Image (cartoon, rainbow, N blue to C red):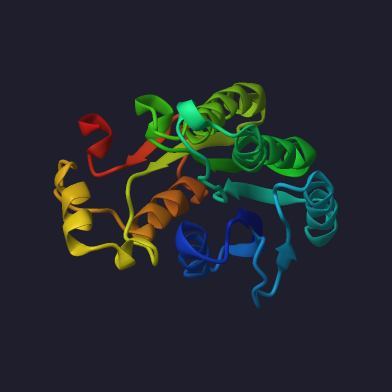
Length: 232
């Protein structure tokens, strides 16, 4: 069986890297990895999602690389910067909206016509899209991602393209492993499972949504917050 092309943004670290590694376990996929940081992946495209011209170039290169036939887009890349509403900086706001929301929308818009019928789109949102955050720009951008998911699911449903959101909770990543143990434990205790989730767990959930045999799930949220969304 011919391998299916999957594009993954934010591929060099954290959840994005875990998604890449999870998909490599399958013989069904060929992966395009996208990140602001260079890496040695075979089909790597360097892209700063804050730069519109680089996003446009990403779309062009993806169309060429896949010979106009793409199976899935996984929008993982995102940033969290800025301050609370009292001290909010407009530049921080605009950058978060551009990277977290506008660029994923432009990627989907620029590639939707070459996504195979029955293909997949997975957008990584956040529980703060519902519960709110100290950084309003981040919460707003992630709420927008779910609105984007629902809209695209409705529009592309006629082509049997499944479009879903994933909500990772606080995860054990390189950054959080450097946190004091007391801080990690305090956050973990807020969840139903009394622990943090891992990028590998969330990546396996994303791989499940990309499985060609999994059908009928679209416009949905896969919640990997270990129950912490309901304890904010």
